[in-house]
Image (cartoon, rainbow, N blue to C red):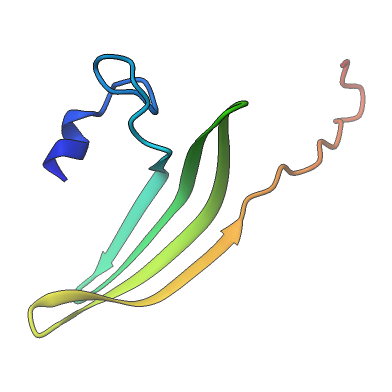
Length: 97
């Protein structure tokens, strides 16, 4: 984890010398954590970036995880994952495009 944190802010898929170092990267966007005593819910968008010969491809999934504190340790008891999609644009009446 410490090594991964040290690489934050570097260009994806390269090391300090510019050599390709990682084929994939995982990032969380819009992280929201709600805690209710010994129960917590985390919701976020997972961004998965892959370094491909033709460039970087990014896919995204909306996820939620439910965690419960059991015997002093947090345990994930439920996970939901669904792919994100672009909502169709519905023009507002009178809107100029």
